Amino acid sequence: MADGLLNKASIILTPTGYKAGTLYNVAPVVEPYEDFDFARASVASRVNSSGLVEMVGRTIGSELVTNGDFATDSNWSGTGSNGISISDGKLNFNNTPYTRNSAQSNVTTVGKTYKVVFTVSDYVKGSVRIFLGGSATSTASANGTYVFYLTASSNTTIGVQVMGGSGTTLSVDNVSVKEVIDTNNIPRISYDSNGDNGHILLEPTTTNLYLNTDTLSTQNVSTSASDYSVSFYGTGTITFSGSYSGSLVGTGVNDRVTLTFTATSGTLTSTVSGSVTNAQIENLGYSTSYMPSLSTQGVRATETATSAGSADLINSTEGVLYAEIAALANDGTFRMIGISDGTENNVVNFYYRTDANKITVRLKSGGSQVIFENFDITATNFSKIAFRYKSGESNLFIDGVKQKASDYTTTNMPSGLNEIAFDSGGGSSPFYGKCKALVVFNEALSDAELNNLTG
Image 1 (cartoon, rainbow, N blue to C red):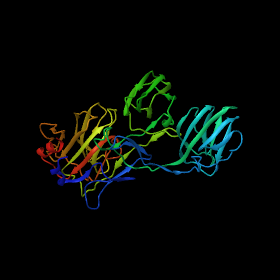
Image 2 (tube, helix red, strand yellow):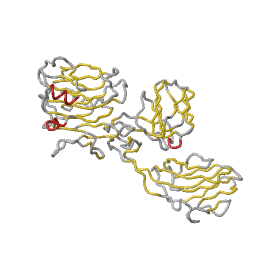
Image 3 (cartoon, helix red, strand yellow):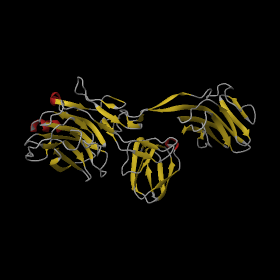
Image 4 (tube, rainbow, N blue to C red):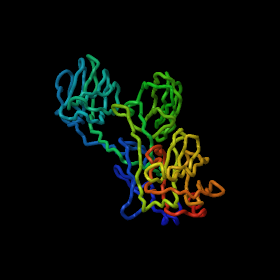
């Protein structure tokens, strides 16, 4: 944004400070700061400035297993018979008959979710799984390190369980159980995969229909006759059959590939080969940020950012609303940003609309719509948009271009403007997209200033 105009701005939001429930403005710099109220009743992921996917609001607690590295022959029940022993830093099952367990109690709390990790080595025969708090991981029947997420359902015990009958032989090591701790309502500053274009990311609710995405193999998902989007990182392949036939091929360890298709009603089978990480399937016509599935399908809740500003910072008679934004997709919904009186009766806003690659500018005064017009835009590209409102001098500027040769002549301005929000002004049509900057000027800027601001 043009530095010389910053001193004229009354409210400036850029991707900077935040905490749970609050998205901080850069300006004003003295109290009251009139920051945004932020809400999302879940955790979510972002791409950080190094181009890596990380969870926002999710932390992993401390180790809860005692002697999970089997450094000593202690703390685990069931050893010393039936071919179960601890030696060489491993829990060994040697020609173990039938199903056998080695366990420890007072590890978990019913209702909490845990990250479970274990390593299988010296594999000859049989299978092994971890049971935790009344739940159990999938079985492992090959050497390797396995990661699962489980919710304790009925007790406090964790155990290693082998199956396969007489002759079962394998070793287990590095058993780890740590609590998954989620903090909701934390905003996200996300980046492109190359670490550029830091922006505030706002997305609708979505569900990752895959389960246990850290160990994704073959998955069956029930589909309706609608659009679905699949995405993942890696160099492997997901092959689809059933309600849709096709494949999605990875291009790199840190590259995300996506595929959108229309499924029929039925069962979609996704078969994984090679390196596939952060896999996601959504019942949407575009892919959103990755939401890991743990023991149940991963859900990211709707995000809102509202109720910033005040009557002292927003001029109802004249001003400018500016944003540098990009849409997530041409997804057929209204996605609004505006200043208002807290209702849709007095509003100055612009928004992506249901038409592809269109943006609408709107001004309402006393419930009457006095400015309403659509303009062409490449919605998924970042654009600099400024709406000047003033009696006889209103106009829209996009990327350095004044959109109408002459200004709107209306003299009917709104009243009571006192807040800015990523929605319609009355709470509907929330903005889903990317925002590098959102600014309110409490005076009408000149054409030259607006060309400079948006150019």
